[in-house]
Structure formats: C-alpha cells, structure tokens
Image 1 (cartoon, rainbow, N blue to C red):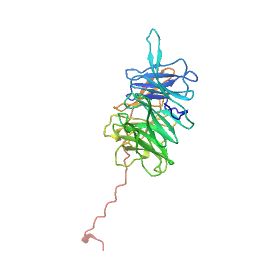
Image 2: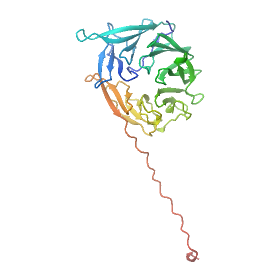
Image 3: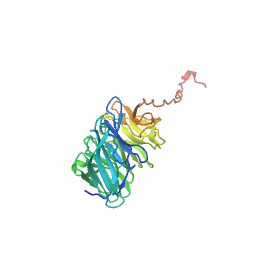
Length: 354
C-alpha cells in the first residue's frame, strides 16, 4: 500500500498507553538510540530496553500499547515502516527484542508529513496521519487491517480522541486560509463534521479533550489574540477564555479523567515555557505554577482521584515517577468597600432651626 509521504515529524518523546499501564520513549543519545518500555502498572515503575541490531534514528517515533508492545515508526530509505517491538527471552538468555513488521507506506512526492496519532482509547489500535496541502489520510497501522481508513480534504494536524471507543477523532484542518477543528468518524468511513466554529475567520484548534466530562481545551484567536479557552462537548454554551489564562503560553498535556458531567472540576496540567508546570481547574480563577522535577520527560497522567503522575529520568534514577496534587484554589478576594453614608435623620418640626 502506498501514500505520498517522504517527511517524518516527531511527536512527544514519551508516550503513555491509553490505560496508563505502559509508556515508551526513544532513549539514549547520539548514535546509540533505542526504544525503551516503561511498566507503570505496579508499585514501582521499571524500564525494559528494546534494542535491535542497529540503533534507531533520532526522528523515529514510538507508541506504547496497552498489551505491553511498543509500536515504532521508522523511515527506511524512502519508506515509512511500522513494526511492533516486545521483549523476549529469559534471564539465562538475556534481554532480547522481538519485532513484528506491520506494513509500510511508500513515498510519492515531497510535502507530505507522516506522524503517529496519540494512542487510541481502546488500547490496541494505532493510527498515523499523512498530511499535505492536497489532503490528509488517516492510516490504521496496528490493531486492525493495515491501510487508510479516512481521507480528509485540507492539511490536518493535531489529533485528539473524543470517545472511549476510538471512533471519533478530532483534527485541526487548515482549509481556505483558516484552521478549524473537525470531528472525523472512523466508524463511518471518515465522515467529517465541524467541531469548533468560534468565529468565521478565527483559527480554532482543539488541544485536549476528556471523554468522561466532555471538557475541551482550545486555543483560538477569536478574542483578538491567541488564547487558551475551554468548552464542553455538545454544550450550547460558548467557549470561555479565563482571565487567569490570558497571556499564558503553556500547552495542556493532561486532563483529570473520571469527572462525569463535572467539567469545571477537572484538573488540567499545562507545560509552561521555561520548563515549569501549571495546574488549573476551569472552576478556578488561579493557575498554580510549580517547578518541574529534574529530568521530567514533558508529559504526565492524571489519576481520577486528582493526582498528577510525572515521569522523569536522571542518571541516578533512570526510571522514576513523581506525583503532584492540585492545591485548593484560594478564595476570591474580598472587596472592602467603604460603608455607605448614613441617610440624614429628619428633624422634627418643633426642633427645626428658624
């Protein structure tokens, strides 16, 4: 199977499976890069290296699946190859890496970018995006027959899942000079429907979504400048742009799940410029700015109880997880207005001055 593609783009270097059980990254430096799988479902996280005979290129992409395998996307000569990696062998044989080739897409012409989409919510499916100005193709590369599943007019980017079944995918589509988020129904042949239409000429991008509560995190220039905002999927209420997020250059990377019908109470984690972390709730009027742990890998995962788990790697701790809890928001400031002036007391007529 072929698609016009010759350029590869790199997503987040550390990806977490949909259920939070595993994670994967491209470890190492320089010419000694190799995939590494982290096991997160246990009392202590631990990492398993998945090296092969040759080191990986720096522009390769990895994606953790819920069954413990790691999907890798490589550019091999002029092809984009996809394969599943998994540890094999026992203690006596030493750690080894098995590889299951899945398929590849062939180059056609320049200007097409191929990148992995975020992990599918079902835990086993994986998809890739091949985008150009002429159009965009969504490819299924794992968890089903290898091949295209949707074709969308315009150049698409991003990628946010809107449901738990892995059927509804939101993409930011650039068409006729503006970028609007659209919903793609992979269960109906890639049927496209509008998702964000804040203003006619505004660029409206979807950054994150939580299927449980319907919370949407948005970046739009509809207020006159690019700003972070939030809304609720399927709601008739307008998108809100909180003042506490005005001028905030952060990018949301995790939303607290499990808050059914309570989008205002979901914790949101933001990656701030300069390496810090911002914690915020839509119901709050305050962003808590915290220092990131040393060696932080740039992403994280909320628990339904409201604890943010952040992966990090240092020479002393090559596989570590630290936790943060969203503090209680301070109460709104109390306005101390001067008391109103007392009304003049009427003077009885017999006491009134002449």
